[in-house]
Image (tube, rainbow, N blue to C red; front, top):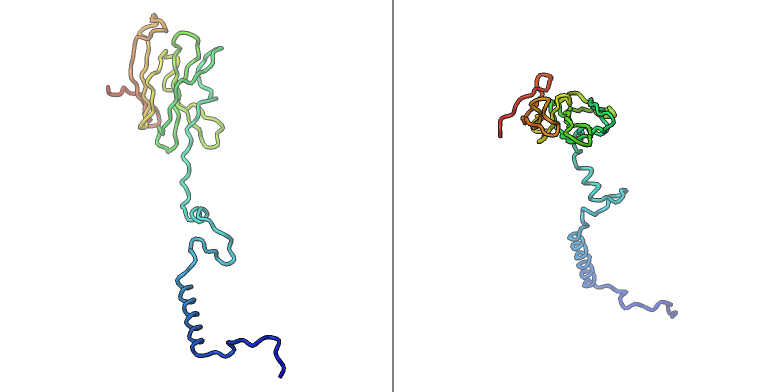
Length: 200
């Protein structure tokens, strides 16, 4: 009798007990695999590249609202004030929607940058239409010719308020204003109406 090259295995004959043990082991593996599932947040879809949480959050997030219009910047504006060789100085500025159109206006307090004395102030309202290179003056609340200085200046609730310092006569030196008054401007019927605000 010729011997095979491969030695005989002891398990060439299977018994029913072996079949039952094998079936039980396979059933256990199948049951265990049904309990262990991949994390749905990191599972890759067939044919798709990896997705990050940031990408999916960005895709599902609502688009942001349009940015509000910027208030006009008084830098570089040609103010109707004559300063001669002195520079034009923007002392104060404040912004707010004065006419209720949803776009802010800027109110600027401007004077000549004189070396001494108390140069008079001008108060101007600026707007900048969409597409314009720079703002423009649309209203003069205080003309420098009125010889008034402006303090306690503010824009709030659609109104401009300021404390004005002036002179009782031309004989009062420009260094020492002797009159103080409060003023308020509001946009009504197509114009800025000046009034005296109630005392605080």
